Length: 189
Image 1 (tube, rainbow, N blue to C red):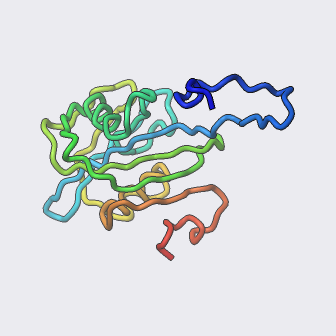
Image 2: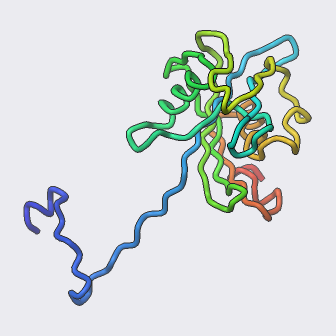
């Protein structure tokens, strides 16, 4: 093997060369980050939600502050910290971010997505609407109940919040048309 090949400088693939295997491109999906900004209130756990607005997916529905990674230079924790500041104005220290759940699901258009949910219980600042073109309301945090995250909300929010309250490091897959037992997190039958 040549020194260039050892350093990752491989020669171009020659499809006409007998025995050459042409590699297909790797599967890629959009990466979403969701912030579970949680505090303990008089009646238990409370989570900050905002009402989506404008020309965005699920406009008018309540959702967690969230967004997408800005590119390959940004890791998921940096992304959720950035989104928190952009959307709510709160400042979060990286050490205060806890992985809550990962959800692999399909969007209504049918494309696969990965959503990383992170829980934060300590932050600086008071949450407020910072992107009024994307958020039209930020109700005061309220008790986390099953009714609060019913069918009128985005389908990935309820599993993210409920698993965060119960445990850390959970995963879930949400695929339209599958039974609830098929959508359970691995090891949770």
